[in-house]
Image 1 (cartoon, rainbow, N blue to C red):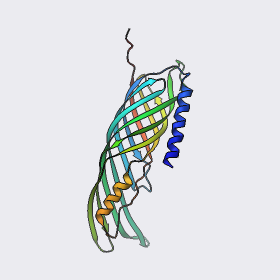
Image 2 (image 1 turned 90 degrees about the vertical axis):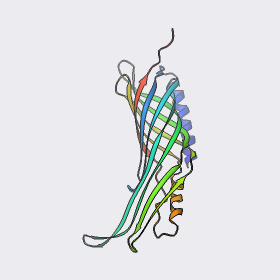
Image 3 (image 1 turned 120 degrees about the vertical axis):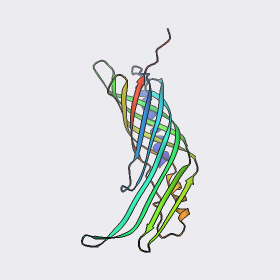
Length: 232
């Protein structure tokens, strides 16, 4: 499924590049601070990330972005069932937290959507494909099983690995040098394997950690753009 989306996005990138070739070049480089947060499943599993990046525009409306940062995982799941009107019986508690670092590159194609009266681009659509390396994912967890009063703590570390992903969104300028992005994305960072390692540590304990952490995310970028002066 991920490969189908990746190939479709690559095709979309080519379409955006061809569509943008007739546009007036806007070769402004930029610095950005970027933040992701997962689209949580049932509100329990979450991951987030903050990174810093720099984007070069060697071609009109086509950018190369390099960056890196740190991220975190969290899970809180208190399972309970009704034991009568206004009364609940707790079944178990699962808590998990973790951290990781990454470095990544990104290729982005932009397509102008709206220009102002001075012919300055104010809104653009964009599509990005990215790839990079993520450092070891470190996890700590706590389980409590209320039926027997048992509790256990565990920790694990999943090795660093390469990953890939994509993003789709809108870019908007609100001044001469400042802009922002809003986007949705997905990637194949191995969060599931990291949680599997944590479950291996707890062995035959009656309760285990949820084996899946959502990969889909929404993101926001605050961008400072600048234009290099040409040598005379």
